[in-house]
Image (cartoon, rainbow, N blue to C red; front, side, top):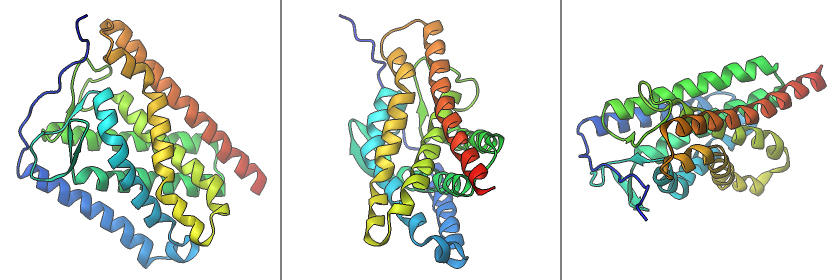
Amino acid sequence: MESTITPMPVMPAPEPAGTIFLIGTCVILAAILAWWALGSERVRRGWVLPLVFAGTALSAVMIEPIYDNTLLYWYPAENPLAFFRGYERTIPWYVPLGYAWFFGGSAYLVWRVVERGAPGASVWKLFFATAAVDWLAVSICEWMELSAFYGNQPFHLFGSPIWFSFCDATGGFVLGAALAKLVPYLGGIKRLWLLILPSFTYAATLGSTTAPVSLALNSGWSPGMIWIAGAATMAMCMVAIHVIAQMARLRQEAVL
């Protein structure tokens, strides 16, 4: 039987583009941590932010190579900025660091929004803004030839596929909702559970929401069916966001 798995392109690691992107990632991460350390956030909420950052960076080690294979995403196989190699993917340093500021930062923001309560419309606006930031970040990687999606990707009109940004944003939102539910019960040493929580939430979110498009991309389905699968993936993301929006609305009503 003929294989329906699309082979990964072999691309060189561009320099100095990779170093520039790594520096930019480090600057964003350092700026967010400085905001936490120097302001009132550290006093009010303790070490939740750096623990979530560390947990999301750790999740990149376990999750990124797997979903790069199922979702057809390449990195240069030979890369001077390589952090580790797994499942035939060479993962550069800016991936776990990017996980930290994007997934950790968006989850922390969602936690604060859900915690104090907010109208459902505000949650949806935040979701689409988060998806736009993700789309831009992943698209910059593609434009700089640092990494990119390949194969017959649906909704890949300009930059990175839109369906993937929906999934990434949903991953941060699910982690934020989990923080809203769990942090009140994680006092003292129990807060170290935040180091592994992101691996559970992001793996579960990405695995479930991308299932339609992953099956379509790796099964030799027709282009029309692949686009339908991409739409189904985005619909599953929006179901999750609807639930989180209801959480925030109910919190707001309880406060009022």
